[in-house]
Image 1 (cartoon, rainbow, N blue to C red):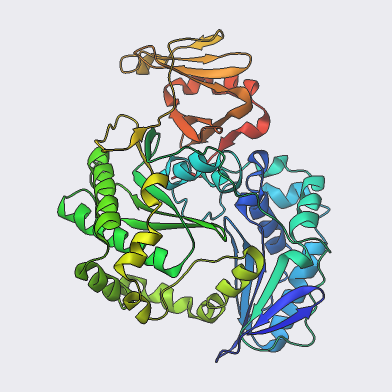
Image 2: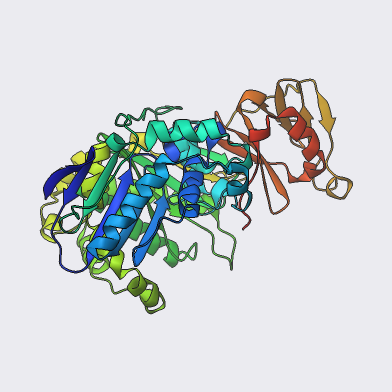
Length: 489
């Protein structure tokens, strides 16, 4: 791979056949926002799209947890003009008509890596629990109303993150000589990746989630990913056999060069309710079996079959429509290594399976059990040998405040209350158990007419839809940016 420089931007070139493709990747994403600025990176993407600098035949823009990228394919002339225009548009932010620019964009319409259901997603819950209200933990929370962002905030965000030193351009052949990448000068972004809520494990806890998920910390390697893929296939096979779910999903979060978060998510199907305790027990049982016994011939055969699996017929049209992106995507790991010192790892050589010895697998997984955390929905009490219950503490003390009873039509099924005090919001269940959230760490999310109260410090959520009539009182008690409307399901 050839390395070059254009206007202070690092350029990585790898000659590939076909039309010229390129991707401009900035080392900033959701994890670089603050609790009260979630969505700012996506707003930047929208403002650039509104500037309409796109002239290439094919292009795509994405905002993820770690990065923001702009990809395109076309003639050298188109690619030159395309990326020159994008960088010019970055330098022109914020627009003079900012109120008009944000009026028609839906806050929380952004894409966030693997946080498909937002607030209620078990993987998002695990990230919020481990990282707290910062970094990867922000991926669970809905975006701030974009109308609340100021021009100064956008300007400062550009100056900090959308700079020449925090960007990498990858190209599938030599970059056009006429291309200009005039971005604001700045420094490469550093990321504080320590865990906000570190607890020795293994642990499980209950939260307001739809599904069950497991996460472990792993040193980045192809072998670690292979082993987690093997666990995913085992869990999926066992879940189908037990009638729990149709499949299990592999989850990956790239943190830094020393740590990736790897895991498995089991989501309920629309046809039936997930037996969460059984699903959690299956996850823990299969993880322990893999760690203790290692890979067996069935695992190796499944991995090889999955690697060579054909694209499902229903997805072929989409797969073919995005074929232009695949050469560019092949260069993503190089951009990530340049920006973050790490990247996702992919199985590219079948011989890598043969090189994974039993002793090597045990070494790789040596810390998986102690770093494991499992989340289940409220009301589930799984039997997990050796795993400690780390659910949020409840007390019997009810703080002073405005006591809200459930709406009249909901009182038959809910004997609890909501207490809005001067410095905290508390939920009291029918048994008198109290969960208190300091206002400084409280966030209320609204979606489809339902309400949830989040303790962002713990990363947990409590459903408070029975108290929806108190929404205005909650709005008054919280700063405007802490009452958010999540995307409708």
